[in-house]
Length: 381
Ligand code: GCU
Image (cartoon, rainbow, N blue to C red; front, side, top):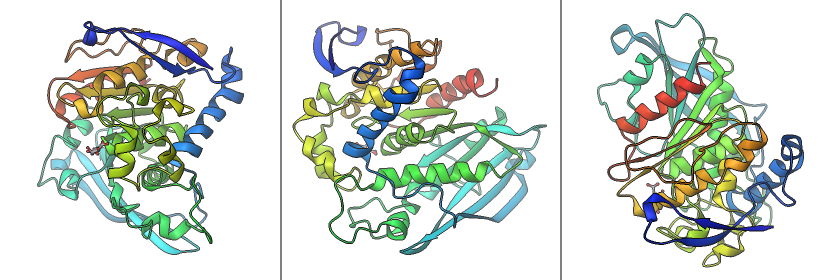
């Protein structure tokens, strides 16, 4: 069922654009939270799985194992305990592993909430020695605010290249004797799967409150954090930083990066079925406001940057805004406005947060400050 929406925002006062979005409440639209939980939500999730991100062949494997390979209780000048955990798994295609870095605040008197960054850059951006420091992961600040800071490298789950899924989690679990099915998982789904395995580890670590973890990522990492938060309802908070096309941005606006372009430049990110929608965004059975709505009733935060036209900031804002009806079913406020805020004026009054940062495509101290403020409202209760 399609609803006609007039999308007028402060950001685009000059033009009133009318696009048709699929009803965020599903088909038929859920009338109650019970209907949403029983039918609307699973159906919506399945549409994203079948047509966009693909189907992971496994959840938590029986073979999953955790080994602390490094521990330093005097990290960050004594403020934190560093642990590097090797998370390993095996399956029909062999074995693989990835490393999870955690810093927990030493002054904590009970298990701490935390942030898990899916790092789509290099190890220098999440340097466990802290010789290199980077806005991308201000671990000292996160710890000082009373949270665990954790991160892993997405490429350790599946290399970010169109290599025919021959490494990492794909090599271990993919069993497609004939052709790869159109709904087989792809790279982004494998990275999201890794985030859930990190959460499996948090559940075993008594210094961490695994029920209060925010998952976040930037750009392709933000597409991944949204998919992780949609699939795994153990994540208490989901944050999308400049995730753009097939992340937070509405596909039907066809602004910035388009579906055909992303599927050509990065054919390994999404499932085979997604290619059917190249140049045919209006035929997608879902749009990205529905991905955001899959977080309800848990909080979700979407952030854009003013000079990031490729990610369509307005499309990201509108997707966050149009998740509202699902939050309302739970008696909660979502973003609670259809007016795009001015740059650097965060909206954090409901269960959906949003800001437009002045500047370019990046994850910065300013973004983190907003995520920590939003976390104070939702993860510290
Ligand atoms: C490219 C790509 C985007 C992606 C970005 C990134 O620009 O087109 O979809 O978000 O890379 O991950 O940095």
